[in-house]
Image (cartoon, rainbow over all chains, first blue to last red):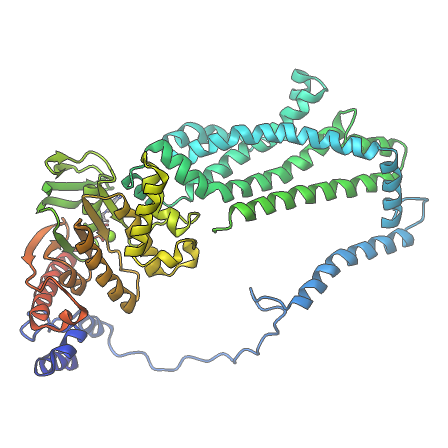
Length: 319
Length: 259
Ligand SMILES: Nc1ncnc2c1ncn2[C@@H]1O[C@H](COP(=O)(O)OP(=O)(O)O)[C@@H](O)[C@H]1O
Ligand SMILES: [Mg+2]
């Protein structure tokens, strides 16, 4: 305190440079003596004694398990290889060990050879396409409707007030609980499956799109208006481009859900598709074929995810 | 001429409305550089958002060349502390944003963008994305983008508040030069007294709670201002005077706060 006053006082006698840099007002400044830190110290009393116990210093952590520390390239590839090969080998070993009943648990080798056989007859491709086509229709429709609604909900508080109560409630009704209703109303054919896929993705994608849209900073919207943009232009030229990577992320998450729902729908009632193929194989106790179809389901799911992730990374290069 | 006439703004809050601004009268002649200083919470941002037309005043009005302001528009460009540049657009396309909304031939638009990029020293960075820029560069993009729309008034809300001292001084020189080159009226708010005195032809001190004009002082410093101006006795005296005012009104405000 006294030091500061002193500095200010002596600042007058010094070259103007110094005083200016330090930002001291002339000593005549009326408020100089009643500085708040001094008052606070008086209330707090003397500082506590420096007697905190010290914890023993941490050992330097290895690089492999440091939190959010990048792992060396070699180690990363090894870990990734292990994550695939260990389960595969375990599966093969298990299938040999448990082989009490014939073909109770076929190994990966059996599954692949069953898959190759099914692929040769063209059956696998037909089934896979039937399933993919259903997803394209049901999920595609859900995206087409939910994205505009989500943008409406995320951009306009009025839209949110209008839609959120309903959408927020309906999303807690599991889509699978609608299956009986959909079968009664739409029959066993394609429409009921497309409708199920629509329901499974629509509510979540609407809410997640709205969330992505709400990430747009208000300052970006405000500044756009001051640059002469109208409301529609703000939506098209600011909100949509900003939220696009987030919206694709949402589509990616919900595509995964759709992919598992289509198989459920096909397990329950259908004449084609990968789920139907599993039910058929079950009827004839062809466990190796079930595994082959499971592998195909996983691979197609992975491909969808990869494609969407690449799209997102391309679109969101600026993030 | 920009005029603020008995401008007031209240925000509703539980337990009664907050008066962010009350009875603010201010007129800024064309081409003037005015700095508004005040402590944090004194209503500086509220003032600018009213002038920008992003918020509606509770009382009074803002007039630009005699016409009441009813909403935001490109005649009043705004620059925020954190730039608010479009992260998916390159520097060049950020600056072009306002021009893309107008029926301009492409060549004309590009010519204008190129001039503002050069004026703000961004030509070499024109293809860069905002994430590749430093804070100062981003602010230059925001300034160039606002100026490209040829605003009557440039509104600056603590535009250099998040920058380090050296960058801040570079930006201060830049904004002075741009102001002189374009002849735009500038209304800048800041809590940095040194900055206000260095940049402004006039310094307006805002008192807090409710925000109102406490003092309106002309700055008698040379028109050509280099950084060395900050060492002149006139500058130091003015700075001390404004600092005392800001401090006084800040302290009065604090004494009113519940403990
Ligand atoms: N949108 C708002 N809603 C409620 N109160 C607000 C809002 N914006 C500002 N205020 C209040 O108005 C006062 C002035 O705020 P602001 O203009 O942001 O001050 P400054 O920019 O000088 O820090 C503050 O008390 C702040 O809490
Ligand atoms: Mg502010």
